[in-house]
Length: 136
Image (cartoon, rainbow, N blue to C red):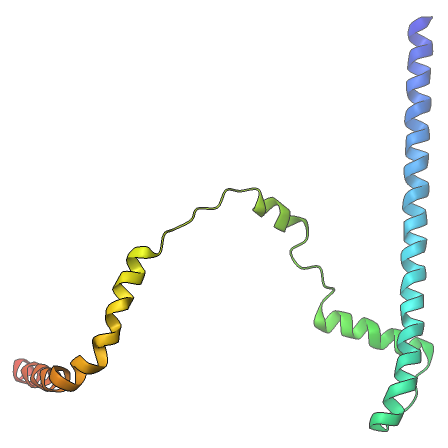
């Protein structure tokens, strides 16, 4: 009998857990719809306050404002970014590369203009002439 009571209690706990999750999901869906409707109202109020006066655009109804909001979200995205995938990438160790050898090579570029004035133009002309002779 002890096993049956234990099993019965587990089933009751699981059922209570699922009912609680169901109510939470239902509540958050209603909350999301409520927030979306409220944001549509604010878009309508802002549009009707600013756009007719600034740009001589017509006033919009609530449903038109909600449509403009949805259209803007479709065109410009929902702002999700990388979301949870970004957190997964950050857990990987990053490999750092030292730039000191590269910096030493770039420090020599300060002499480039002087070299080009003294030897570069003449050396380039000789190189082009040599290529022309080889192709003939």
